[in-house]
Image (cartoon, rainbow, N blue to C red):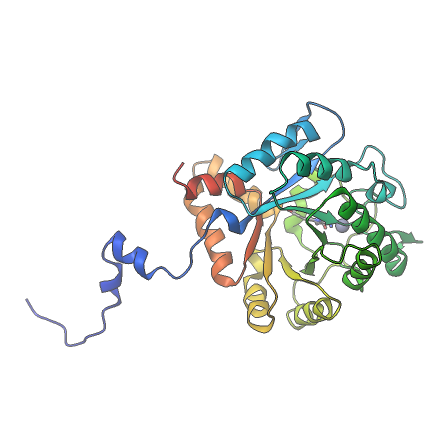
Length: 327
Ligand code: PBG
Ligand code: ZN
């Protein structure tokens, strides 16, 4: 048997499952995952989102068992999106103490005080035009929106939420929310900022789930141009300055470089949103039998972690936690 004359053989560390496990650099765990839930008014409602197989809009009573399962499986938490009965020009339900999300927060925290509950904080599900802020003519009025976001965050805090997550890409939103929370005595509620959010076609299915397709125009005057990297660093730096506790990059797959860049340049914990279109593509291919769904999902989620994410918002969270647990 001829022996090659080199000593470096990386394959030595890949030969068996035992050694592969010992040299593994990234470990995905259920507590890294956060499950998004879409809450609608009513009772006994479980309305499937056609473009997101396995995802449904849920009334609060239907959301409770799902939240319980999230806790049992050891997920990091849940993030709530509310779809109100009535939408108006100013998104009033978002700031109403009896609003859909406030009710959901109270019900879930009462039942599951230990579960980490995040409230997405934006106006697009609550406005009748479905833009992420109030309008001045056909433009989103940045500063008028800030005041409403502050009130929304305070009312979520008063309902018992653990963390607020502003997602509307308004300038100054983190600072405005921090000030509003502090003024109301909620100095301990952290802000997870969707600091770097791109104007992405990957949000397509979410618009059905959250019923937030803009009635005119698009979100490109506030969400970022997918071509830009330096601008992502600037957005993140501004949010750090304004007191963000946690940064997010969204979407995930097409922006792994941005995730890595933020991980290297900032010290805050980092989240990534594995968005609706990314989920829909996996589900569609899996339904055709073209990919091995559990393996593809766990590989993707591990990739996010390897790229620098501490927390992953994903519609696969329950399934992934089951697969990780070998269940
Ligand atoms: C809007 C918002 C969006 C998502 C969460 N909050 C995108 C949008 O409609 O612009 C997308 C999440 C997903 O696609 O899974 N504030
Ligand atoms: Zn929005």
